[in-house]
Amino acid sequence: MTKAFRFSLAISPIAILIALLLVSAASASAQTSPQTLPMPSWVSAPQASAADKQNFPPLLLQQLSAIKAAALSDDYAYHQLAHLTENIGPRPTGSAQALAAAQYVAGELRHLGLDVRLEPVTVPHWVRGAETAALVEYPSMVPGATQKIVLTALGGSSSTPPDGLTADVITVDTFDELQALGRDKVAGKIVLFNELFDKQKASSGQAFAAYGDAVRYRGAGPRAAADLGAVAALVRSVASADYRLPHTGFSFPAGIPAAAVTAEDADLIAHLAAQGKVRMHLTLTPQKLPDETSYNVIADLKGSEHPEQIVVVSGHLDSWDLGTGAIDDGAGVVIAMETAEILQRLHLRPARTLRVIAWMDEETGGSGSKAYTTEYSADFPHHVAAIESDAGAAHPLGFDVKITPAAIDALHPVQGVLQSIGATVLQPSTSSPGADITAMSDAGVPAFGVLQDSRTYFNYHHSAADTLDKVVPAELRENAAAMAVLGYALANMKEPLPR
Ligand SMILES: [Zn+2]
Image (cartoon, rainbow, N blue to C red):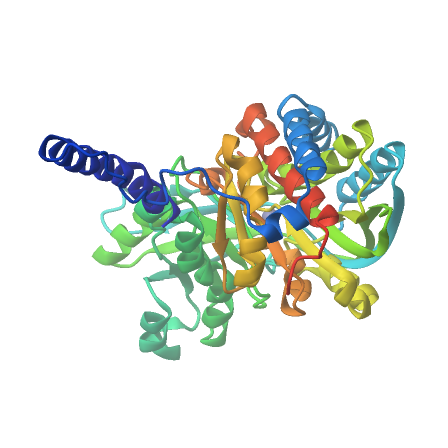
């Protein structure tokens, strides 16, 4: 929708301009007296309203421009991302790397001069084991042959016996198909959910809608299969590119082994199963270990005028274990860190408290967000706004927002500052624009998610290919600019954003 909107804006002024020129040429030839044509609003420069001027005095606008310029020439975020992804590495919830990442980010923010706390969070600890599969019986099989199936366990999956299990595979496209088969046909089988990811939707800019359509099967499929007696569940990887890479992710614990197969292998199984009986030997040996204590990193740059009022800038520190968590979501953490770094470097003191949060455990249940809510919900009325970036690191288009129409109006000057990098969209959302800020958003705190170009995000998301090279430094700088400008604006507008 965003893209179509921008396209129509690009075209219609030209059409209108041509029409206007024709009209004015005709009227000039017909009349001798100069005519004042009514000016359409798009011709004139946007006028700052009285409220804009009140909320964003000239000094604040200058500061916002300086912050943007600083971000666009600053590789602080990229260097931090390189450290998180390459020196620390994958940061699955409960792992030593996730803990080290929290300690590292806390140290870096302390070094910037922020007031930093590591706040404990009890997190699940699940570790991947062996994961192999092969088709051992299928129509017209060459005697003695097998076919390798590329897959990866879903987070929280149960284990097969150490030497695996063998069962018939049935494929379904929808939950309804599964229910129609019923327990008789499902019990004792491996169920493959073969829901397609709508790549055209993704490439047209609606990647999160495409993800939402398909990810239901990853989340709820294994439990639905288990409820009908299945011995294991497979889902087609929820992804927008097919390079025979499996994409993991959270799945509600179902008490049976559960894995994501590559799109290619899902097709293979579905094609063969349409011809006749298919049997698979499946080995998955992940382990659920005892819960661990990990941490949210909470770092305050105290407000000079309203220290009790808080603006949150955030991303999540934990990642999946297959890649190194560059786009999901090291990028979100480092651009939030850079907001603080720029303000300190430019000696800009926020009027309200700017709070950098590196969330723990977004991926496997949100225990970090829940811990924050337990600790701070009484203070949510003083949380003026919350921003999270958790949609990658590609070019920012603006923000997904869950704020009132009056609040959107109040942010026109911010759109003006961000216009030169194209990050002007304020796209109203009916749900929280960030998973970790959901409780705040539900409590009425104005909530923002950085809206990135997501066309390639799900090519890599939750796969072994989520690595530093997928982040374009210039685009990361734009994201840092968008978050820092909005964060400082929210902290320094004269009136807090209306709720
Ligand atoms: Zn994420």
